[in-house]
Length: 303
Image (cartoon, rainbow, N blue to C red; front, top):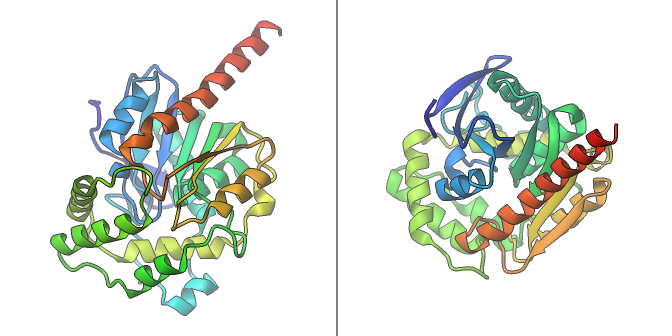
């Protein structure tokens, strides 16, 4: 399979996930998990190439209800039903999808890196399927605990007042407007890149229903603090101090809940992946994975 060829994998229970891969198949696997409403290319191509260049086989994928993966057939819930969680999948289902993807690709385990909702999914996999996770990196995410990691009121207003885009151009305008608000203010804002991502996302999947169902799945999962305390894999939490979508208290709560987790705060980082922060984020991810690999090697030598 050539780099970045998109493939559909049957992950069970009638769900297919679209994924692509970059890097040497013989290298250790890293699975990148996208955030709410985001598609696999929300992990930028050059970011993925740089990560693969450190010696990893990098897989990124569309979660259910996003991109070219399976979309649910039922209508998105209204605001009241969303909080009740009836007839709604949850993060546990999306974690099972992720493990199913590992099975389909043929990985016994992998390093998991999740951003925002993807961080919640990665946390859930680590809590319930520890044998499948080499390391956990949770970026810009939270635990679901009340009053922690919540969006700023200005962000809530933008989300509630924004109607779904009707055209490709509207999707690009909306993305530029939203990310100029929630994105990093300590790094240059690349509006062109945001618009390009939104245009590709529209071409791959223009349905607005999936993001509502994903959001309902987050609400249906509630406070996950207790289950995070069962995570027993090397864990890293990365958060920005300027995040208006997931308040930095979410990152702090995540690090407190996961035994032994390390919290790294990036000054000036918001709720995006600006190119100026890539090297720091990649360094943090690979420092964790390399440390664990060296530790396992030393332990094997002493057995």
